[in-house]
Image (cartoon, rainbow, N blue to C red; front, side, top):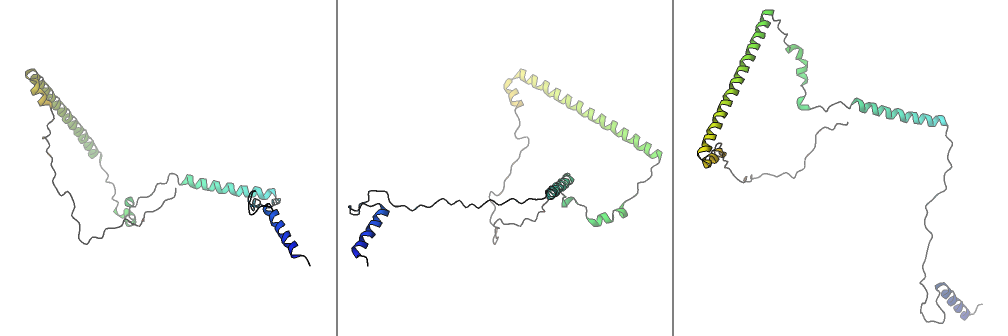
Length: 204
């Protein structure tokens, strides 16, 4: 049976050797504190051995991938010029079904009628041309008379000339009067801004 004092001394030595505390000192630590350290976690695994694949299988996979990409490209090119339909501009189906019934045949015009219409169109073109020339000449005469009157006025008095060329702000009077604030509506439940988007989605 071991001696109890020997066990105590052995226990004291083991603790001091671990913590590096001198035996002769009384709880005075002169070295660095004991720290527990572990190695870095690598989280690695052995590399898997590559399986040998038949080159024909690899070539078949690449061919399938290439055909799939070509199919997607053709679909995108086909729908590139396709415009999004507008519901408001679409013709109802019942009108399309009755289009043949409602279509009127073009009347067969005689040569005399076609000649008379051509002459009438030429005469109308000449009339509108003469009307345009008359209006332009009248405007030129009015502007020339106005210019001569302003020149004579400038010779008489420069102050009167400046007042004459000033824009008339009362030529087109415009005034608006109305409520500056809309009164509240009794019992009106104001929406919180939420809404349901029912617009159609179109993929390009």
